[in-house]
Image (cartoon, rainbow over all chains, first blue to last red):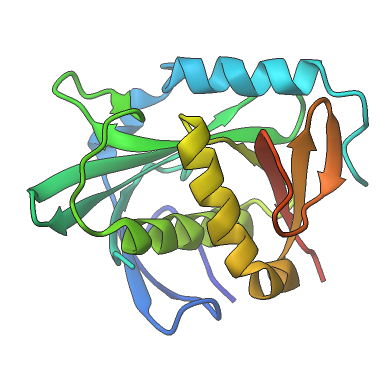
Length: 59
Length: 144
């Protein structure tokens, strides 16, 4: 079971998709991006698709 | 696939570096809340001079497949952390959407074991099948 405890600064994860371990390093500076709309055009495009959707999301 | 990532506390932003014939190019993957509950938009691209994502830039770094595998890995890990979230993603151009469609199609069997994979066809959601003409993908982790 993968654990994403954010108190840990470095996570080493292996999943069953790839036979390779990856390392996630918590980078505090990236938290400064919180609250900013990143990739706004992509987000607007996604919202437009979702707004116009004629079928509900699958259960 | 690339294997060294920087991440935010909520895992909404992940960065890694592409290494290839044009050097080291920083990349960013972002998951952003949409207007619909529990649906998050996946955006990905180079980090430009202003620190913003540029998802139209063609970096031509010779590592396209490695990048695609890395994105799959990031989505895999993100949906482990947030198994109930839907992820919507679209290519920044028709060609890129086509590339994603081919890549998902080629690995559909393996991916389908882990994810529910739907496609936007016009204004409807349909279960994705190979060679389907689509606008975007909507995926969610299959919960056991």
